[in-house]
Length: 327
Image 1 (cartoon, rainbow, N blue to C red):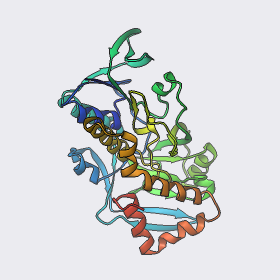
Image 2 (image 1 turned 60 degrees about the horizontal axis):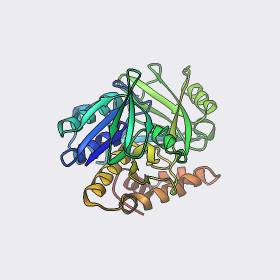
Image 3 (image 1 turned 180 degrees about the horizontal axis):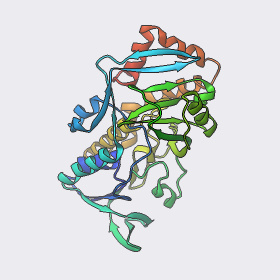
Image 4 (image 1 turned 135 degrees about the vertical axis):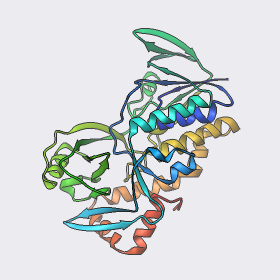
């Protein structure tokens, strides 16, 4: 059986890695040196779960900081650490793992899909690739969804910048409305720099002013998960950002992209229903965090944030976020 995977980020690469020993797998990545504009936050335990090289970790933390109304709330992560990776290096490493397992890797751009054939552009020439199954891991702007006339992934536009003018030793989250809007602003260490971001441009500029820096923002889309997102259309499966599989409220995507890809691979291997298998693993958690995300957009936000001064609430949140605790 021929499986064609569009998108060589964490979701596409893991799907290719898991399926290559059993099927004829081809992985298509648009750009060789693409560096996704994200903070690179990742659960450290992911390295053990997928047997990844820990040398890819640039920073690792045992605590984070929540800032709200000029009050700093330190959150002890204990043994459930959070790490930062360079996305360009991390994604290239995962593609290499897929190749080692037998996947064929090509760099090109999806331009057309027919029933069992995709046309990939290489140097302005369209090359057909036949498939029995197509896996779309091509991000929030999924070309595959557009070509199949499927509804786009809901998203929010965030703004970010990278600076050397502000330093932080841990991940900081800013929840004041003027700094983080309906979600939050952030400052993450990134090599010897700092990745600054927020939702609206106005919020980003306010955050820069708050941190006493001057940055020109760049914008990009982050999926906002909804329960009704289509993740399978006939013999086409969607995974990662292309399926909206980003944790509500936290916007964490890497962990869920990789595990969703593994769920999909196992569903294909075991001939099970992908949606059902994904729901068993993540639906309750996503629905609960979606509910909390809605609270975060109301005046109850103050109670929600300040409750994290209570150790019990901290532990509950950390177990929900970085652990396997379900609702």
